[in-house]
Image (tube, rainbow, N blue to C red):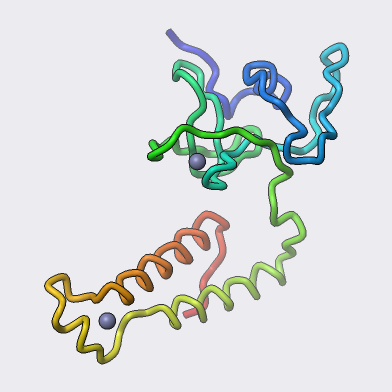
Length: 159
Ligand SMILES: [Zn+2]
Ligand SMILES: [Zn+2]
């Protein structure tokens, strides 16, 4: 069976499909589903358990986590998390980010990545079979998360 991907659907269609409860995140200000008119209040569904985006995909049962752009028509990559999504609705954060702000964020992420870079002398790392001690493995995970976030935002990281 073929069908529309969620990224090809309008917000109203997604919301109809979802039958979820908008307003949980917006202080109970759920949009009134009047006669199918403009339901677009700028919110998108996400998982309140982990904070990542979630959506319904045609041909896939239930809510799924995805990475990518929550805007209609945005590129999305579905992935399996270790939990079922718990759906809330929120206005996507970061709309106040200007081009200058994005450049600053790129510098900040670059500084943070350099700070977490596990290069250097560490007897713990040398002794560890994986070449990284616990602390520095955690640092590396954080650096990877910063790099992934920068990539998702299309931000050039100054390094
Ligand atoms: Zn989740
Ligand atoms: Zn170490």
